[in-house]
Amino acid sequence: MGSMGVWDTVKFFVLGLYNRFMNDDVGALAAETTYYFILALVPFMIFVVNAVLFFMAPQIAVIIQLLQYLPHDLAVALEANVYRIIEGRSSIWLFAGLAVSIWSAAQGVDVVIRATDKAISNDRNQQSWLAVKAKSIFFTLLITFAMLLSLGVTVFGNAVVYALDYYFTLPDVFLRTWDMLKYTIPFGNLVLTLAVFYRYATHRYRTKWVRAAAASLIVTAIWLILTMGYSYYMLNVAHMGLTYGSLVGLVVLFIWFHLAAMVIIMGSEFIATWKDFDRYQHPVLRSSGSAAVTDAIRRAIAEEDPPVRKKETK
Image (cartoon, rainbow, N blue to C red; front, side, top):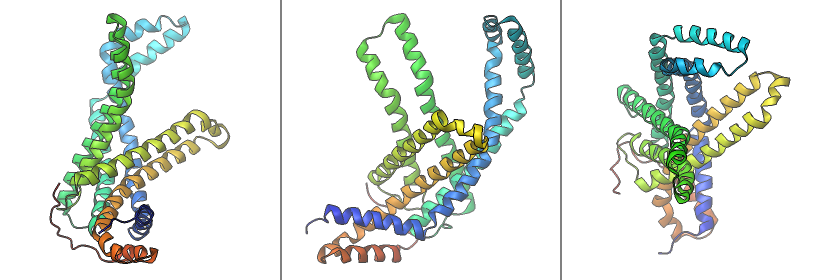
């Protein structure tokens, strides 16, 4: 048999993803996920502030010394505030903020896991509450670690490399290589993390690594585009807040959360559509005309596999 044409393949995926988006209520699931992510934002900020204060405490003498380069009145005012903030830090708020933020974010990941089950098996309640909760906490910690690692490589790794270059004069080829790696390493890290999520978040069914990797690659690329759009707003359009108030910035942040959650959920819908494509491409080849493709898509949406599935081989 031959293979399905490029146009028919593209049409199958586009129409299949559209149908799945509408039938699986991806927009509503993304909104539910966004709610929990926003709920986790405030305790996470409390954790970040207290963590910064704890890390700053051993360097208090250096900070005070740097203040001496400022005008005297300003330095005195800042010095008093620095001591007040350091003394007011709380280990209780540090761990409480971390625990509440992880729990709230895990609630959002919980929704994404159930959305993945719904995409693959048309049933979001296949897994027990305990199993979903354990997975959601694990993947929340994994994604948080991936984000911190990406940030660390981009920010602190860059500082370390250029500090070494200052003292030891590193070769130019090394610096050019590092300029590429400092962006490709975080990108690859996020792709790998999402691939692990797409493979192991579902109940029993294990998608092929190639499908998980392809979905995570597309999702990460779209997520970076959304992030660049949000960054552009913050740098160039944020002055609108002077006219419309700071609420505009919060609305844009919430929209970014919503679109990011929607893209992650659509990654699992992409995997499910790919499964449908493999399942139905041979019957389509026996038919002719684009009507056969549309009919295959309808059958792919209407005829779901049973909940318990065999594992796919790599």
